[in-house]
Amino acid sequence: MTQTKHMLSLLVENNAGVLSRIAGLFTRRGYNIDSLTVGETQDPKNSRMTIVMTCDEAALEQIKKQFNKLIEVIKVTELSYNNALTRELVLIKLEADENSRSRVIEIANIFRAKIIDVTAGTMTVEMTGDEVKISGFLELMRPFGVMELVRTGFCGIERG
Image (cartoon, rainbow, N blue to C red; front, side, top):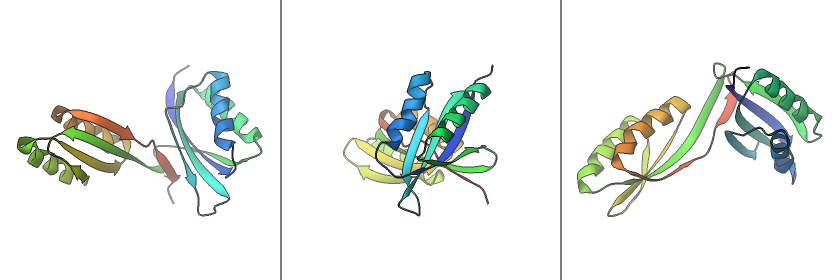
């Protein structure tokens, strides 16, 4: 079967151990999580998890069934890339001397990124966007010398 990228949005009770039980479902079945974000919702009793994984349709269905068996899981929604809004945050620390700074700033402005730290030999840039925007930005930043890179993983919500 063909392995494709899937994004699930889980509404869960905001209790200790829920994240561990969710991750355990993947571990026990030998599935990998590509990206996982979690945070409180508008109701502090609940949290929203956005999980991105690469698997075939049979594995996806099995995972969704297992999630629905957990008492703390309120709702499982598969987000399609066509009908969801997704964002990711990336922080990039670059090698940047006096000669390269203006070019880094120029590219950052084009992508609506923010310079959040500058030292004698480095610049740290913050950017949010969808997967295509983040990938394009990183491609243009690599020639400057990426010293460190941190990505949050995807957050997603259905349109409308």
